[in-house]
Image 1: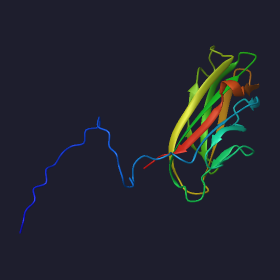
Image 2: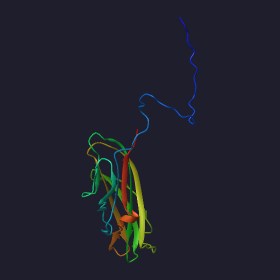
Image 3: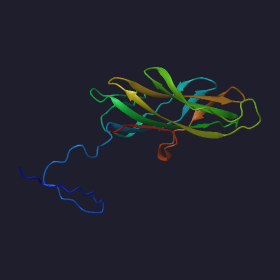
Image 4: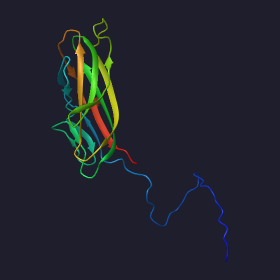
Length: 179
């Protein structure tokens, strides 16, 4: 019986490799993915959860973001871990904005809330304030994700979610994580 000695060698990442077969298990595309944004202002009432109208898409690889109902729906066969980020800019012409709480909802229930209160009941007030929220969730087909905001003013009045599309002040984006 002949014995063949196999010598172990490490890969040099600086080398260039030419493959003649099929390489599997390498890379990925992080799909589905989307980027939606608000292209119009939206009135937000003091101390009230309001769904953000991300009504325009920059891209959507699987047509999974619904611009009329403002939610991302996991396509059939695309369950797994997803990363989402949302940003919201609020504006109060009276300069009475005290705080903002962006929230992410899964299937109609809140799963994450970012607390960005500046000084509720205090003397510090703002004309505008931007906040973002990020979360990774394990989702199944047909699960849906929405973004809400709760804002606070010193005068309990309403204020504006700023939807200047060319600036992308208020956006919602997400993608499936490659595992």
